[in-house]
Amino acid sequence: MILSQPDLRVAVDRRDIVFDPALEESQWGEASVDLRLGFSFTRLKDIQGMKVSVADGLAGVAAAGFWDTMELDELNRLGKRETYSLEPGEFVLCLTHESVTVPRSLIARVEGRSTYARMGLSMHQTAPWIQPGWSGRIVLEIVNNGPLTLELTPLLDRPCQLTFFRLTTELPADLAYGQRDTDRYKDQRHPLKHDR
Image (cartoon, rainbow, N blue to C red; front, side, top):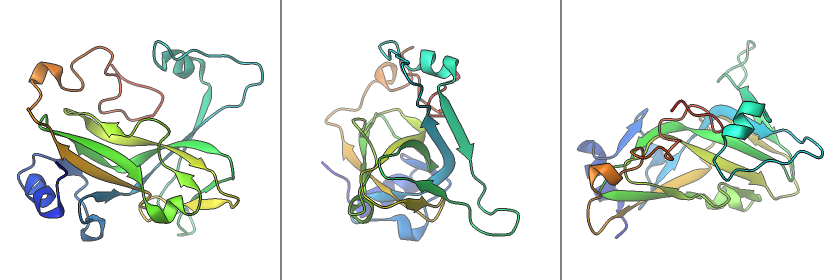
């Protein structure tokens, strides 16, 4: 069962679902919430001839420094909004501005929004599910499949939406995301590094 806006508002008011910072009124959809783009943009380096394995996670990629991260400010020193230019064919990892906490009775799904999809942007490659027990910002795996360079602006762009589904049975605490050693991304502050 998908939660409608009234159910989502009740869950947020009861702090079953937590958004930090709190959602603005314009972020509420009929049966989803829009998330804003954060300030961190991470790009994998194109190193010719380099091969990596992710069978054991991203530790090898992170340790080797095969990535560059750019942290934008809301405004530059001249008072202009900072943006990230995403070229055609470019792939970048971005964190949402909002951190979300998902209770053990729900699972969430992140998807792109239609306006962005019509410009050729995809928001995730194969990782749409936000598991019960999750907390933290969501990493968006953004690809520009269109022909135009697109300007991404933190806080102004709302490229994705989060939908919540009720589980048939609440997940026991020991099975919630973050309880296993392999659950590396809970409360992450960078898409390729973790502090666990």
